[in-house]
Image (tube, rainbow, N blue to C red; front, side):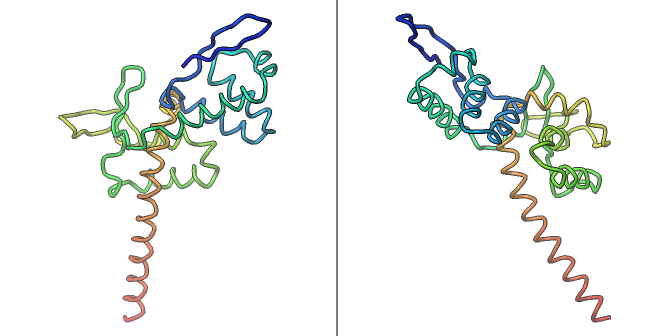
Length: 199
């Protein structure tokens, strides 16, 4: 998307993201951090991050123009596709979302739980590196991903290139799964306790 700015009788054109898919996970994490500052800082940093407009010029924009740009960014975020992307591609490598969360290993779950407890926003790339792994074998919509070995440092860096849209849809899907899993675990534990009491 193009943004036109008129200054001193001259009109300059700048590029602004055209869809939420253009925002990488790394950029999205910055946008989240910008919210911790003042509203002016948030607007300045957000526009600078999502466009090629210099900060000096952003600070000279009229409030109504800043509001228009921020409104356009919000519209793009609201239009995002929330359907889970099971297969994504980063730098020519296909990564598959864990195909069977019911069979998630204890190690995977322990790492995920740690990332959530230590601040999910700080550990989103790590979480995505657990949930998305390189595809070893694929036929049509069925695929097998690499086995989880806990060594995710390199993949965590790759996951920063995911689009924020892909991350958000994965989080929505994963949150629903975790909610269901915790209810299932709780009822299973209750059954075990009741059975133990009977004996």
